[in-house]
Image (cartoon, rainbow, N blue to C red; front, top):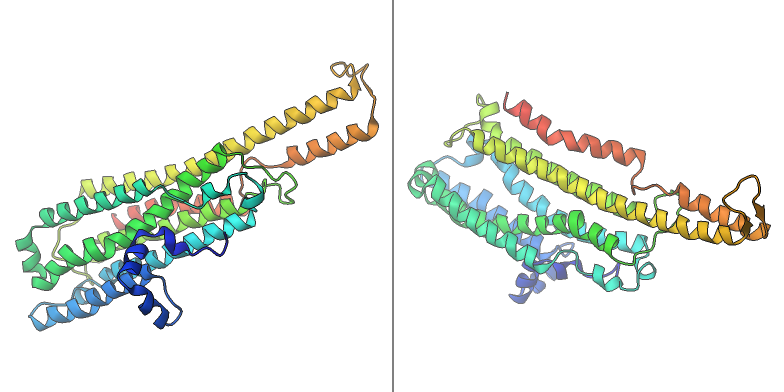
Length: 351
C-alpha cells in the first residue's frame, strides 16, 4: 500500500492522464504529478502572459500595484504540491501503523474521501465562480484590467485555480473526517505495546496536525491577499472595495469550521482509544477474577495462579499506560499555536 500511486485518488490527475499528460510528466524533471503541471501552467498563463498583455494594452500588471496578489498563484502551486504530498503522507502513515495487520479489511483505507464529496466541492466551486463573476460585474472587471482581467476572473480562477484548491480540500476533509471515522468504526486494533503509549496511532496524529497546518498556511495567505491592499495602502493598491462585515464574518466562520474539524478528528480518535482501553481492561479484569478467590474482598482474596496473575497485571499496566489521544505534548503545543494564528492575523490586518 505504501507504494501506491497516490494520483489515482485525484480526479484532476485522472482527467489529465486521459488527455495525454502522462507523456509530458515523464519528460519533465522530477516527473511532477499532473495536478502540479496543471497548476503551474495556469500560473504561468496568469502571471506572465495575462500580465504582459495588460501592459501591452495600456493597463498595469496586477502585481505592480498589488504585490500581495502574487500570493494567490503561489498558493495554487503549493496547494497542488500539498495535495500529492498529503496523499503520500497518508500512505506512509498507513504503512507505519501497519494497517495490513491491524484490521481484517485494510482495503477500506485505500479510498480516503468518498467520491461524492469531491463532486459536491466541484459543484460548489462552479456556483461560487458564477457568483463571483456576477458580483464583480463584467464591466467593472474590464475597467480594472481589460480582457486580461476578464480572462483571469472568468477562466483562470474557476478552471485553473479552483480545481486545485478543491482537490486539496478533498484530501483535507478525508484526513479530518473520514480517516478517524474509519478507524473508530472498523475492527482496527490498538497497539497497546506501543513504547510511546499512543496506541500505535502517532503517525495518524502527525498527519492530522500536518494537514491542519497546511490549512493555516492557506488561511493566512488568503488574509494577506484580501486585506493586504487595505492594511498596507501606502504601498499596495486595488480597484476593489475593502472587505466588509460579510467577508469578515465568512472568514471567521471558515476559521471556526477548521478548528471544529480538527477537534472532531481528535475527538474521534480519543473516543476510539478510550473505548478500546475500557473494553480491554474489562476483559483483563475478568481474566484476573478467574485466578483469584474472593476477588471483591481485599482482606480475603487469594491468588490461585501467581504466574497468570502477574501476566495479567503486566498487560493491564500496558493498557493503562496508553494515552487516549495520539498526540505528544510537543504536538499539542504546535496544535494550540496553530489554532490562534489565523484569527490573530485577521485581527491585526483589520485594525
